[in-house]
Image (cartoon, rainbow, N blue to C red; front, side, top):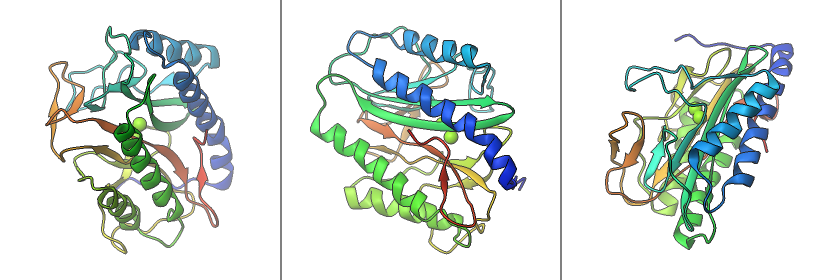
Length: 255
Ligand code: MG
Ligand code: MG
């Protein structure tokens, strides 16, 4: 495993990247309204990247599973789409549940964060699904402390999902973050408490619970990127970049 441990100084240097990613997501949430096109939201994020002199982690992203490069700076996953939603011409409709996942590099450091919101008139069951991902994320962050194990994070997420009555898919999860978007360790969304890599001061990780209302199975969209729930049920995703320290964890992408 290639694990980066950052000094206190490097963690301070990373803060602007986290603040920038948070700022972009806040702006996207403010702009996510009925009638707004996903491509307009991608353009908004792209303009903020240019204005700040940041670098997109997505636009040239071409992993083994994708039909890369991604070509956009933002993932927009609507309703049954849950991860890696490729922005396309689509105007948001009343009651849509949209997840924004955004990662960028600033001054050589990356941050990665995601948020899910209901557009217009929310459905009760969507708000509950979003809440489950947010509570799971908060509980994982609460145990993101030196001495605890990676498995403690996944255990917190998995237990929260089950408490809300949702199944967990473990094909995609959290990851180390540093000078690049995806590093070790992998953070499963259904770990076993007390197992796995020991969290150490200076470790920076993206923690990202994502849930589907009716299934733990996914399917790939025809665009080669967008991952949807296999049964068409609604989905949500919450993510923060978090630094482990000697004391309390630092949520780099806090909004
Ligand atoms: Mg992300
Ligand atoms: Mg991530």
